[in-house]
Length: 232
Image (cartoon, rainbow, N blue to C red; front, side):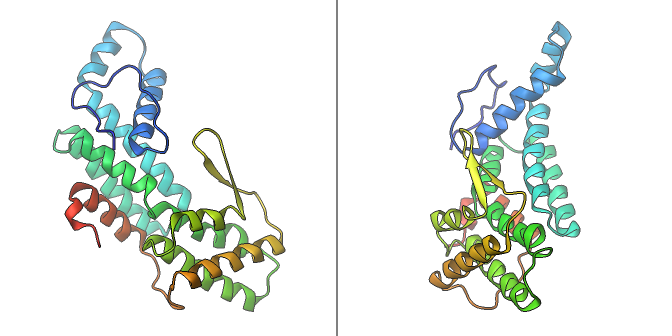
């Protein structure tokens, strides 16, 4: 964890691989470059409003990630409300830079987003596939178990990534994951089989509860603010 400074942010930042704070700082630099004219007035505004800028950038980072999951609207609305609340707390000085950075890191590097990405498979590939009704039902169960196993971390992160590698690609210096535009039915069956095998190996129950992403988001935030609340 690289704490964010409590003073005005530096003009440059050294990238740190796979770190929520890094994403936050890069976003802030891009925002400043695009939105703030390089004038004396703009510089003064930036100095006195850096907390607002940083809060808005952190909000954008997390909201963008959550939007990509296409979770139920009521859950997304609840998450966005919590994000806005956190941004306001940071702007007001009630939340430290280190706390904000830890929240971003918990969300962007924890199990919440991977679990959501597993469910994307159902909407992006399964619904319009050529699999018959019986196969689709079995696939939905396998995907739910796979996502649940990621969320409670019974499925190791490396195993989870290996399964997603069957339907997505990682590239770029940060290893960004990009889901393929389309899959053949055989490719989809291969992913489902791998997901089921991972869930079985992790001992994930056959029937698992639906994931409430708003609850899980609140949990990740609370754990960032008070590590003592983290489940064993």
